Length: 426
Image (cartoon, rainbow, N blue to C red):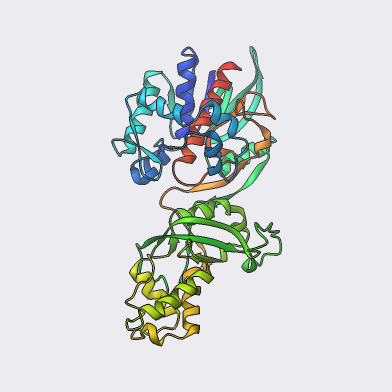
């Protein structure tokens, strides 16, 4: 019989195993992994560099990056936060660097550095890794000297354990097993995805990036099941807004602003089957009125120049060209000859540029899911189940997810550490 079995050979599973074995070296600990390889998400994170965490050291600010789990993670982050994560890796000879956007990576720029660290630590601490062991059944049983223990059946064998930690990430089969044991599972829906858009204004200019304000519009969400709580009476057709870099891609729009919208609106956008409209303000420091006035001034000052060649604002030139054309301003038209209606059209394109989103695409390999074990059923001081004794959770298996930038990993590290402490002290 094992003292602790951890189901899931990912970031949270390894991190918890290491902390458990370090705290109580005599415990018999094993990690069950369904596949041949472990730490798959670690390997692909950050384009193969592993975005370990984010340089946000204030727990009150850190939790603002979690669309689900904001309230629940505040206490755990005070207990074990970004500073502790950095210290964990530095103690094992891995230095992390902070990039301009706050993301943190190993100085080696290689996720293999993190993978090797975990594998070396599990070997040093005598933690077993049971690969090719897909779990088929989980049953709570009473054994002599081990009440409320667990029996875990895999395609290879049956295992007994005094305590069980679930760190399987977004695994529907495991969620089904937990549901059969009495836990509530919040329906899983994709988070962190890009918007599929076919529109002449952005076709042919992939790779361009610029700062913008992007809003999801309520008037185009036609699913009658959706009840929308509007953010502001002044903008009563806007459900969600985010400002930040927007990247034009071959399939539509991506970048931090889009990814944040996809996370905060994960359930809403799922309910409308990813068919909705967005409004982009390519110049978020301006509104429609100020832009119109400014363009009218340019009409006077730059009268002899053509509109197409006079980039009036700091937007990528090819985007400016497309927006001018979308405003029904022909290529040879000079500012002196632009009509008031055309000026209004251009002001609209710059500050109220609407697009129809028709579907989504996964952001690189970093598939993240909103949903999982209901947060009310978890004790966040120990990450233990409130429903079943000697059962613990860590990572994305619970209904916590974050925006991109290392925050999902920080949830994994914090939850794994808290669960490890809960297991050791239980």
